[in-house]
Amino acid sequence: AFDVLTLAPSGLAVVVASVWMVDAATLLAAHWHISHAVVGMVVIAMLTSLPNVVSAIRLARRGRASAVVSEAFTSNSLNLIAGVSIPALSMTLVASGTARFAALWMAVMSVVAIGLASRREGLSRWGGAVLIAIYVAFLAVVLRSGGT
Image (cartoon, rainbow, N blue to C red; front, side):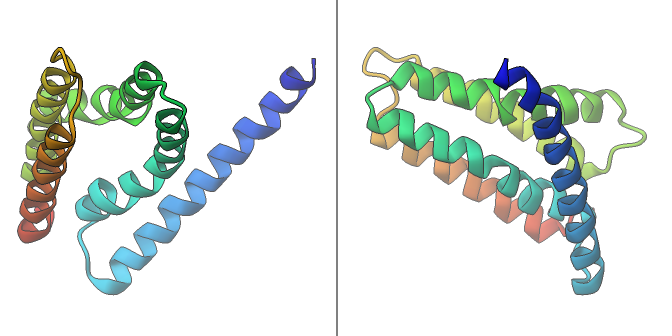
């Protein structure tokens, strides 16, 4: 019963905090002359991922590898694919070149992550390093393009 009573206020807090975060990021992007696409794909994506990273670390320390994979694929990854990638790929006239690139890169990185995690030994340190390298390359391309 207590959980049900806290659901609405918690949901409202998440929405309000998200609006504040996006507004602050937009203002800072304008002030520092940074593309909104870069702010959205890098800064906001990283900030919204922090709770998932904390959860994944706690689960990994408890030896719950399957729960870590589930956390990764059912949280931001799924939200980004459903909320950003599919619309960006399907609305080529509206989406910027960087947004289309990010959507495609995200899909490729997801396939690589699934492939690396599906191996018999699971996701190794080497596989993790590969994923980090792919993401660093993505950041380099997005930051170099300026979000256009």
